[in-house]
Image (cartoon, rainbow, N blue to C red; front, side, top):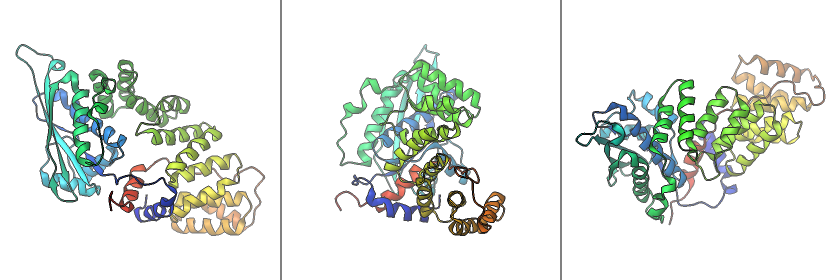
Length: 399
């Protein structure tokens, strides 16, 4: 999404949002580096990163996902999980406009006479760099048995959140409730699924994680994503509907449920999902997809929702196409031609848009209830970028 245009959209919609909380931090959490000799424990470094990201997100901080982190690593041609220099860490964070970089290492040891890694002990050392002031934050360290990894990760999250927002009252008991801890074998299965590049293997690992710990919602979300990619739309929604409203992935899950319902021709459900999201996150892509679902049901609101999407990014070819298509469907030829001409000028290779433009210019009437062409969906939900820009405009607490 175009950042200046998104900033303009956020500015115009900012007054509609709920009263601002303390300004959230934007945090890049890296995979922790395995300093031990046991390469089969590399998954632990990603597990620590995932848990910190989940807890930071759940407490209103803005955290970059694995895709954004991976893109930053690719830009700098860096290997995931390596032991980076401080200069490299700063460059990584600055690549994504992060306020903080959280990173660390862990060491695993086996007791005398023990050969099973599941019985190992680990020590985790976490560090934070404040990129706004270019200085190090306090270090934190946790140690224990690998089987207690969930407890170790939760305590690390609590310690680091107190640094990210010292004004917040965070009782440690909130983090150390045993009901929050994920079984270590379920966590390992989930992380191995995340690290796999084979969809069949991913599905196997995520399903195994859920069998081991049915209350663990992260693999359910990933299974929903996989099903959507495989065009198994009803199965996707059966997984994604498990994500509770207090989960950081909730709105992204609802967006994917909207995509699944739309592609399954359940336009009523799709419009409900997208409309629900728009109340909290009035993003261009949400209004575009809401308009597409409404258009399929011949609802007049579709045109206005396409307009809202286009107002946020006046050069987006998808929004231009959909608005022009909806206007043409309603036989509003002059405006349809103007909108479609803009799209064709920007993308001369779009033959479908060019065909619609010809119809608008010739004033060809569209049969009632039949759109001239299939509307185009947005498949990415860029909530992180929206929250980042909203945070830029939000005054710091106490100012």
